[in-house]
Length: 308
Image (cartoon, rainbow, N blue to C red; front, side, top):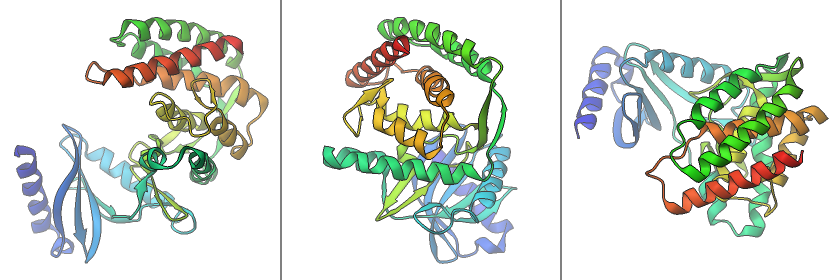
């Protein structure tokens, strides 16, 4: 309740400062990340919207997200692959309004879909990401060591002993792959930054991306790994065929859409899947079933890394 009152006061302060908000309103809260941001449903200029309100100390994040929406909106505002329309930005109050869209988050849709129909969503997801990254893509010297160091730090926080043993072995395999990446270039682009299936909203034949606040220039493989590993560690394998702990058909589909070379497919993608597996540390609050699925994913990943 204190958080709701604080948000309401902040919204009213913005309304008092900006006549453009005279007819705007804030309704129910959708999500609160303490100390970072709140996401609320509301309206502006007679249109339903989603308010993203950045909390104290995170005003620069609001500016970055708005700038990215302004960049990508002209490229992805029509057709089957889109982003949400940016509607309003208050830099003084750290508030962004984007259109509220109809549809279902893709991950929830996958769980409800009959198993035989789940894999049909893999190629559209790959096409959405390809369209997002293509205009900003370039090649640069691989910065794999930094990613490996981040994974090592994250692995030290793993609270579950069986997972910790698996991750120690995975780190060893990633070190071996890192030697093969030394001295080569990999592809980078302005990427989504948090590309998991629930950040794609499906409505008919349209996929709309949301929550682009983590967008930054990074290896294209990171978003692909995030998407596939998010499903893999939760036991979602749409095609029914697993490889490297994730959906084999999904991995092949992304590789084809991005026209990956042999080195990208056989060295860099396995490396980045391992990195993503370690960066997302399980917490004691997770259910036993989630931990069991994570163990199965890690064990499958390790087995296939060793076989490379």
